[in-house]
Image (cartoon, rainbow, N blue to C red; front, side, top):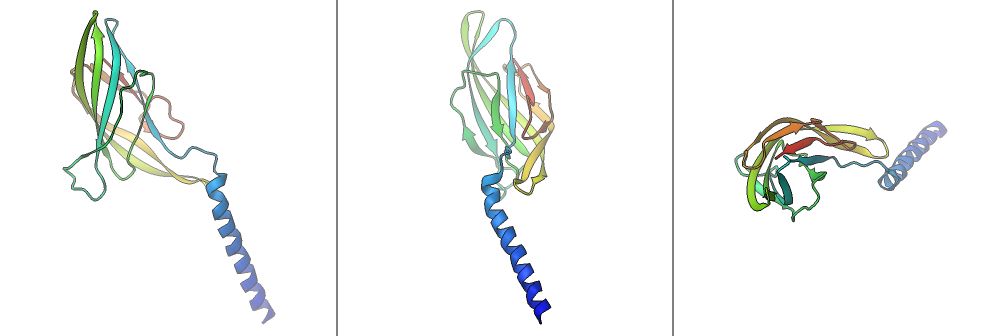
Length: 170
């Protein structure tokens, strides 16, 4: 009888310590858990960007596969060295509409380009304190070429410590 009670007490102590540990996990994680795609812009010598805004289109899990909705829209960026964009872990496709204000040989112009990115989300366990995160792998990119001349994939794996993933060349 005593052994049965001690087993129950030990089991309760383990459950209590796990529950207390779970509560402290939320505050104890010091690692970054969100993964952002980092994009940089590189231009020709005659063109200079004056502003870029981005509309991102994606799907929600319950939407039909052929419908993409506006997920977020940015205001104009005036610094293009590194733009961070968050991907949806429940999807595998995202489309960006880029609005460019640029100057070419002193004249002002506007252009739009569309970038379609196919990616694969991959869950990854960090540790007991932080839990899991989602990394992404870029599988394919399709783009228009109104201002963009090329897109270079510099790092196809998007994770919490990623550097530049895409270089957009205009």
